[in-house]
Amino acid sequence: MKSKFFESTQLMPGITAIAGLGGENAYLVEGTKRALLIDGLTGVGSLKAFVRELTDKPVTLALTHGHIDHNGAAFEYGKCYVHPADLCMLYPAPEADTGALALSRHTDPAAKLDFVVNGRILKGDAHGITIDDVVKACPIATLPIGEGDVFDLGDTQIEVLELPGHTAGTVVFLDRARRIVFSGDACNLNTLVGLPGSTSIEEYRGALERFTRHLDAFDVMYGGHGTHAVDKIIISQAIELCDKILRREDDAIESEHRGRKQLLALRRGPNYLPENGMLCNIQYTEEMLHPAKTKKML
Ligand SMILES: [Zn+2]
Image (cartoon, rainbow, N blue to C red; front, side):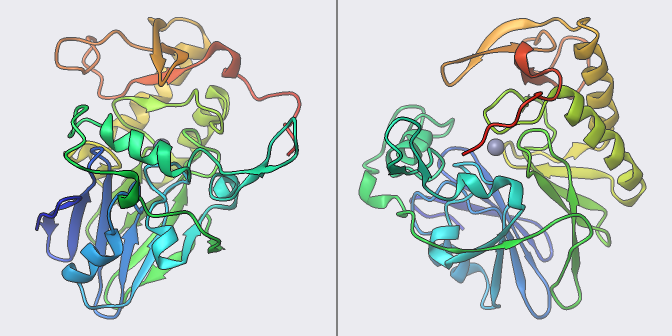
């Protein structure tokens, strides 16, 4: 199904991928009683209305993390499940100098429009999409999720597993019966672990290590960007790469992400994948190799 804002693809019976204009993905998992919408895209166009065309079951929204390109539909459904460590991305916060409440960048309509206009699909051509198409942020109910929580959809159970790194509150969703994981931005061929709200590389490595106890339960991961399922071998490769980074033995190519200086761990070949044949790559900053000694307080 295709609309001005979204395009859906059935991956297998009961599972539909939905792409937004910025190339970001959500997944709709339907059971006999309920449907689980994993991630809410950027919020340009009504994802709620689009999903209503795909299923008549009651829909529960759960976020892999709080980022701008994953939280959009939360402000249409009025509630979502999210890990508490990412809550700060969904609410206004006091500005450091004035104390006045300001929208988080992750809910700012102008930033959201910019995300899709500069996204991979539109490539700078806005196609008549304006700020009026952006779902406006509003107060919502946020329900906490964490390791071991299960969404019971009837004949289908989806488990929550924590995999912090990209953000401190990143979770992934395991469909044990189909042996797949919906991984958001947790581990992919350009994992960003140098953003405000990311953990250190050392903490990310620890989370990946803990996550390996689930490797027997699934084969592939469907991520928040890109259309292909990624083999689970990417998890052990990411651990190896974190070790290289921590030993300062990676390629450490100077790069940037949305104006912030970053290091890219592995040199890319012409097809975007690392030259050394690995699936995973990591963008990070040198200041965030190890856990911060002090916590920033709001
Ligand atoms: Zn993200």
